[in-house]
Image (cartoon, one colour):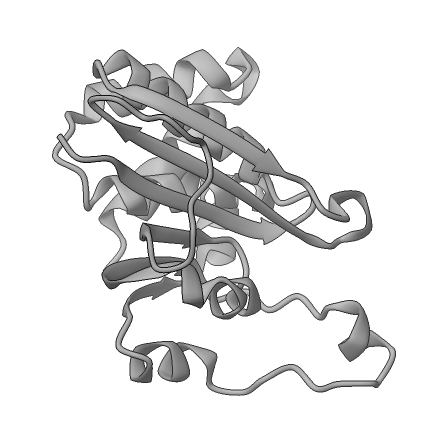
Length: 191
């Protein structure tokens, strides 16, 4: 199998690192060679965070270059746009529609771009945009956005749901399992 590339992007504190750990452990358990690389940036200050997850028969590098990502999983809409140049021509963006103002918007030096979902689609990207915050709240906590996104991503993989659940259970503390299972299911089944 040729190497596949997934980028998980967002803003610090949104749970992207847990999502990448879960995805990495899932793919390892399914027998793939997996490399995961985390780039934190200014994550503790609400800055951009990106994680690369690469898997296949043999993976030599953890880094995804421009034009190589099969999937961009985005926790925040502007981050999906920021990382768009890394998406393959036939790649897919799975994104939360949440908008978090970056510092230039907060200070008034810039405006948050309008109609980003439409602009992403106009670029030629296949875009699956959903309100993950709403679904996470329905599951029981806004902090479960990461599992909503993993559930949605699972929709595009030919892997059994049981494998995803085992990866979830291996990476989420037991007291949060039921909430996260529900968030995963809501993301997977979202229309």
